[in-house]
Image (tube, one colour):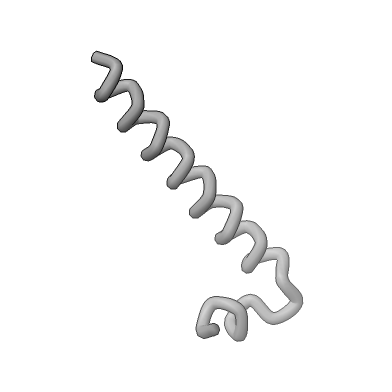
Length: 37
């Protein structure tokens, strides 16, 4: 149970990180340039 909970936490953090990165790129003045980098 603990391992599963740990896994879920990692996935959650990964999704949050991905969302923050996407938002940062979306808010960037040159999002296309940032995504291609």
